[in-house]
Image: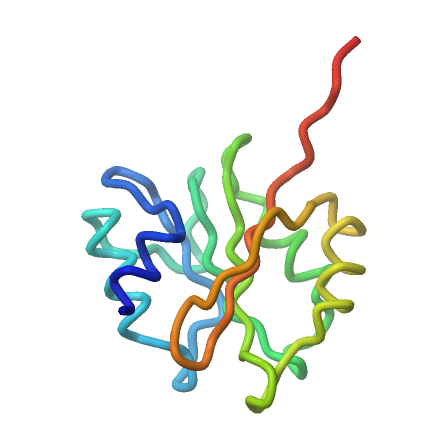
Length: 134
């Protein structure tokens, strides 16, 4: 099941995946499955090169979500994706959908989909909006 969920994140071999906010309550099986799909180790928040995907583990009490999203975008490739991983409803640290809906556009992102990422975690896919050129 976890491997299936990791593949739903769109991780392909060769993608550079940065993991931010991983802690003892995070799902290590999901992290391992993502690394396996990328066929490389995940990089941490100190990585300064360009990344294709950011896994941002976030809990209600972690601070300001807008600031965290802006920080996560600093090394993100132009067409990169941020997967905001938050505890599912009823779990400690759950983040309300409205909070994500408010924070994403403020940070310059839009939510495109949500998935059940792991037993206790849900994922929200965030991308920079496409700019219409006229």
